[in-house]
Image 1 (cartoon, chains in turn blue, purple):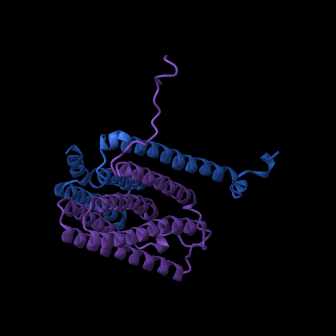
Image 2 (cartoon, chains in turn orange, yellow):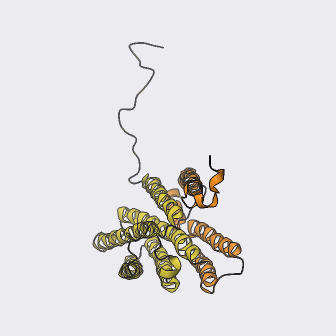
Image 3 (cartoon, one colour):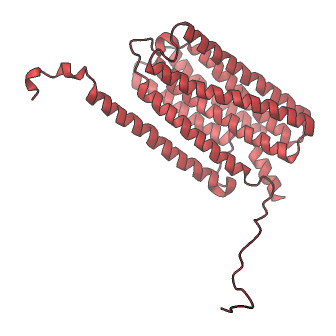
Length: 120
Length: 203
């Protein structure tokens, strides 16, 4: 019996799906509208809003469509997700960081900026 | 410790009996997380190479945001129609489940058609994957996502045949729930794609 109620919970509800859908539409429309209309004067602010909407929308999808919560599969779903998020962050941030420094330090054009006399 | 007559430790010789498919949920979730890691590598690659145009065209010359917005809508619609299919399934309504799965398939195929049109258009412009590192990374990331959607569609057709033939039996319900996770997961990946590849590229 408890397995049955558990199942129903995992399937979500009509209202849950509609809530998720409406939030997703709003969170998709905001960044698309912003970028398609040319963006704000401040580029940084535009990027921040677009990325912020994406992060919120991912969370909305996880809660309303993937039905994630802290007690599904005795918490293992959440734990494996958190582990994945940590690895993903390390991988993406690490790659960008390393490659950015590699680019700035090894670009051949960089030699143009340095006066020849200063080279050993 | 009594030796000989009565052993004090018992080793189980038979495997635990689990309910059929009891571990499918967590197992499939772990698969999705590993898939997520693969996409993370592709996103990292794109992030590193996104400015390497090799004097070729960049995002602003190539991308059509209206097309991407339509594509995003297709995937979002398919997500909610799959949700309705799952709800119909939990109420044991076979015909309604099949109907919603059919609608989901329609949106999934529309997404693929629009994406193939976009790829064809880009290659026609001479902006194929071999043009620059940026375009190689773009086609790999977006193409891998499209490939996942294509396999999701094949899986969807397979399950529609299964449900039509054998009904909403426990095994089919379990399979539909796995595909539900897969389908919604692809939608989450698409959020990353349209944000990082298309929107940030166009700002």
